[in-house]
Length: 347
Image 1 (cartoon, helix red, strand yellow):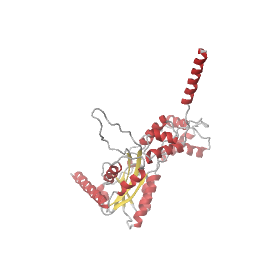
Image 2 (cartoon, one colour):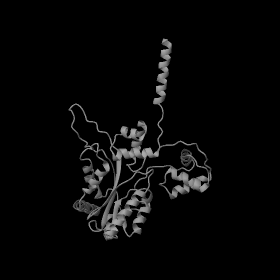
Image 3 (cartoon, helix red, strand yellow):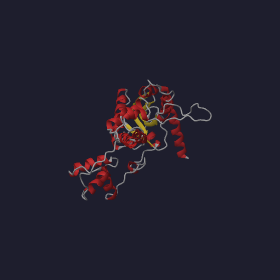
Image 4 (cartoon, one colour):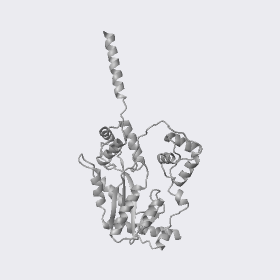
């Protein structure tokens, strides 16, 4: 009798262990829902994971990937598929030529173009990556702001732009994108003398904005996308230029930093085609948008979220707190710093 009881207990524990170890299946739409819950409702990782049906351990990794991208690229679910094709030697030249012309494409895009070009069955991403590393001597590295295009097209100096008629307080608007962690509490808090108050890290969020000497032009939250693309900046620039057209600000200079995603040839071409001029700041140049972001961050983080609060309305209110007087003051400060920089160059 006792033996039977022991066996039943062991069986119960085995069943319980199997139930615990069952893997939760999830898809890309659940990942999007998970990120949305973190951003819009300010939920903890655990609660957002429960609501979206994602395993807790996976949820922390997804948040880490998302924050690493600056809050603009959705983390993706890794799907391991068996390779249905093989890399041939004649494909190597196609890969080298395609990467030379499109150095910023993702591995997935390379895979799709290879299928279109050679008509072969889809090759697994892992097989393609190994072939590109070993046979084509291609490696995927972090791009430096001053590499690639800048080796052949160096940004103009401030003196050159001013010599061509650029006036910061008269014919310029300033654009920038900021990625910050929306931890909606201050970094300092009250606690007992012998203990420290723990602060949980929030989710990253990306905002893009544009100001002029007359006030704000536009602000927008960057919706996360599966991979890096210029579409968010291109769409935002179109909206900015539409506003400038309506207010008789044609031929203005659109000033932005020299980040790779901003200085892409397609971005500059789109700006020039509309009759505006794209100005890319040299490294360490001051952009008045930096002061703008400081004010917005302060207003967002001023008070913690309550249960009924949402992040999107708070971001909107924080952006609306920027006044025309603020914008003009920040741009005038920027002009003073630019003039000091020019004087230092003359010494």
